[in-house]
Length: 565
Image 1: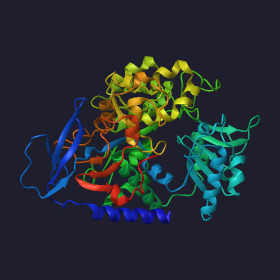
Image 2: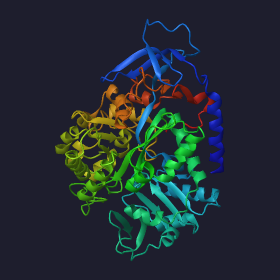
Image 3: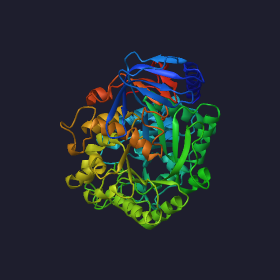
Image 4: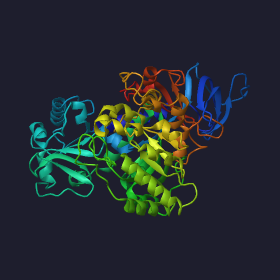
């Protein structure tokens, strides 16, 4: 972690020195191929724009428009493509940073490879009291079961290990971790969770799903504030290198919020963060009587609360209306019933906090929609109820997204990653409402796109490629998976910019290069309105500007942060 900390300090120094614009000066960005949503469903083309000293756009210039004769600073775009900074409408900021500081199993293609990586990490970090990591996915290993503690014991040497599944909804423990958590055959499954058992017995096999993960997480070493600060720096590097200028943090704890504040106090909060508290208790601790205003020159805001109604499809925690196609014994793991959900949503809404509810399965989505309809009769005004993921929706429920100002916060990369797994979990009859972006948008609901990082990499151009093709990086399946849900380039870009901004109550402030908007923009090497999916995936972010100031440069970073998978 010391190495990571030094890297963050070096980056802060680099970006401070890299800011080319005087602190109080107009900046003319000219000679560019400009692309921006026009706010009407289309795209506006332009050649330059003027930035005020306070970091807002003063004027946009089209072909033939006269430029101001006197400007204090000018940036020659040299014909490069410019577009608005991307907004990640659903991310986990601190988890993204910590994933870069601990064992990463996302690239493991087999159980043996995962175990080999665990052994190597353990050997390289003998001082670590626990082996901590994330990113494993048994579906990518060709396993029709979860991994076990006994398998993990082979490479951990008696040191406790806790490895979080790629979806964040399950964890893999070894025997030392089971012992530390005092989990044994007599330990009951908690409400909303499952302790996976050894076949034919009650003995814990090693994997914990959803609410059961808390049994082990309660015994993990307490995270130091300085480690949180380093994780935030790592996450910011990843976002800036990928062209993300604003991020919605889904599940902010009071400790996370304090880390954001510490960074901002020192001038180190480059990315704009809009927080949704991890449950009602954190909502009250952070927001008190209501949402915060924009803080630190629009760098930080607390909007609302994130609630969980179900788990994930990959670990069979998503709440379905009918049993899983590949496990008829379960319909998933609801975290609460509709009455409990409604009570929590009401508690937030009465103090004007925006409500965001995690719902993946079709029963979960129907339940959230029911609660929204019921609460909308009491809580009037512009609420912008958010449903996070909305991955599997009964086609009969899709029209309901168009009512009550509901926002569908979705992640295109999940479709490409989950496609074959979703087919196995759902069976062919339920696929029509899976990752149904176009159908949901057709109801009038606003689409807000994100990554769910670290579940998926925070790579919005990869998300754009999936959104316009419904194919993976390998170009499969030919013609796209459920191709009726393909989006136009304009609609996909809007979901990562103006739609995402609207979901944050930040329209008119973020998401476009237009008069009065914050000057958050990118120089990239690809025109996203002309590129095919393969070209979109290969897009290089050259520079990331926030508030009219250079926040990240590929030339100065040397590619260390990385922008591609």
